[in-house]
Image (cartoon, helix red, strand yellow):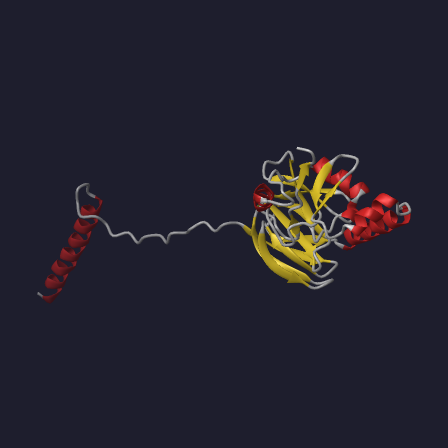
Length: 258
């Protein structure tokens, strides 16, 4: 009797399990509970940029200030894969450089900033100008005696220049507005110079001007976001982003006689 009861209960259990399995697979039946898979969100590919500087410098990454690097030391920054612009200038602001770096691989990418060659070229060019400068003429003596004046006119081109730049860091658009709004020596038609005008003045008559940084030009480059500026120490042109402002200045010019 007892064995018969146990057999019946075993049969009922088997039939119950079979019915439950069929019901779970039957269309229209109650939904099966399936555990959800965790959502895996994509992580942006990133790398590390290691920047080394041969002189103490202030540096920027894609226009953003990144602070100071001691001479011979380094700094790190997390970056995404792609093109980046690294700019750096010496603490006195007289020497600067810009580097384009395309990062294609994960891991660490190294940028070596070399400001010492830029400084040496500037000092060599300044010494060369001093050695080749002719003896003072009566015209130069007259110009020196009028050093208090706020403008200087180049006798070879008849361009009138402001004797000083604006004296502080300035972007290209700010420099353009500065010259446009300038009212000096009774004139209101001041403008930023062309790059050729800047190169000419820094090859021949730089000593007549008082510069505290690198002057912007109005001349654009092949890149729509860059224009030409000039290193006053060497007279060499450099293409910089218009948003860059470290050690950049506004030196204004106009055509005398207009």
